[in-house]
Image (cartoon, rainbow, N blue to C red; front, side):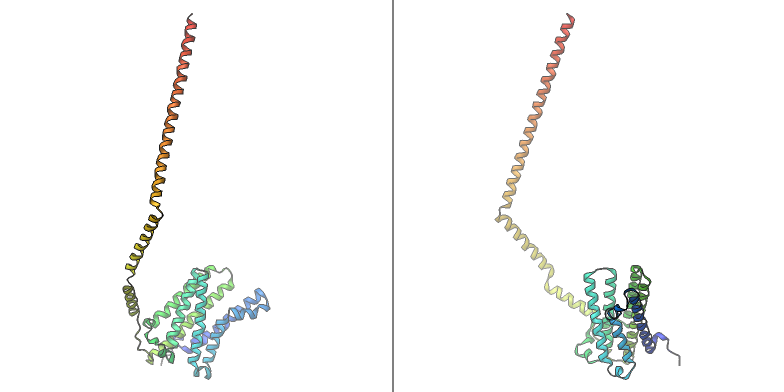
Length: 299
């Protein structure tokens, strides 16, 4: 019998995740100690490493009897943690819209969808909330896993571009490796459920959702409503113009402008005529003066 490759062994993946989380926490704390001193260590643990601590507790409990017995409860707890994380990333996206925040929100959303549709499949919640009808069941295991890997790598690239210190580079790389290993763990558990044929009869698909949305749009007659609203607005504008006699006022203003223009034109013409007369008078005077001076010179 051939040995499993490490990425196909749930036990090895779990051990790697535990070791990686411990390394991330140690690195975070060492960087925090170097920057802010020992008084900031506890605050850093509570704020930045909270999700890592919860995930670490989850995987450590899976190693002992209590965690294996209450696996479903631990799964619900883990889903709740990632639900809070996804909401937080959404709020961050709303406050600060950037490529980094968009990719972070997409990644957390994919992980949350993956967790819900895998870890809850063998629980009572799956049947009570009719998750078998969810359209996300149509997405294959490979598709979701590789989508998370691709988004994680893109997010790492963006973080590396924006990071100017070596500590940020190290944390970004470790965080990306953690997310890939974590999604691999979910991948292996779904593969296990598929092989055991646990709740594999799912009816949800995106075509049904699309058809339902299209039916709603067809029934509401959105195009006709838009046309009706446009006509209603036009009627209101016409009635307002009529009530306020805006068209008559516009005509009066137009007449005044025309009259004023004619007056200005007449005045300009008068000025031009007067100017020509003055020029002719001056020129005639000069010519008379020249004739007189010529006669005196002849004498």
